[in-house]
Image (tube, rainbow, N blue to C red; front, side):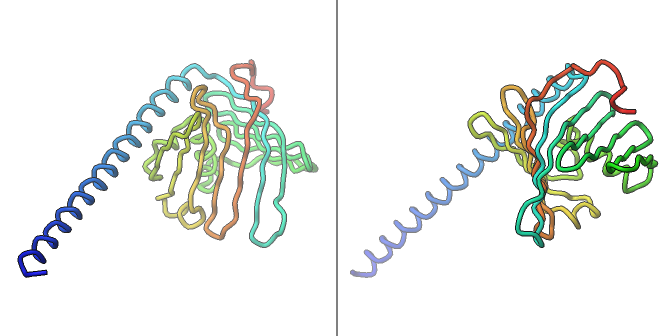
Length: 217
């Protein structure tokens, strides 16, 4: 191969590489736009749905996987929420346990003793904001997380990466899976820095069925 042919082949390869890189850049750009569109559409639909919801009642199964244990810890019960900020996490199995978020207080019951805690302490307040943010969707738009939204069939998968210093130390990421058509949270997974994982599966959701605050006292 003479020098001219060698240069010609080299130039052809360079042009091919440029075309490939341009195509890759276009695909990445299109994917980014598509992901952004999914996020905007989902948040708009979620906000519209949330405006019409006064209360939520749901069954749950929680699986807690610890790095120091061979088997997951499984619990189940019912979850209740009523606007503007009433929450009850009512574990029924394997042992009775519940906690209630009600305004400026947190009520805990461990099966033996009922305890009232001031919800305005920094640790409890952050926990309260985290729970409420998951339910009302404000966490999906929070600047304390970077987020990605992906649609697969009839599901929207949201990945949240903590940016807040205290949360970032403990949590690697949070994954939420929503049923797309009904905008229902089906699964919440919290992956911690040490490898521990909490997965919560929600089912039999009922909306606007709680008429008073008796459950939250």
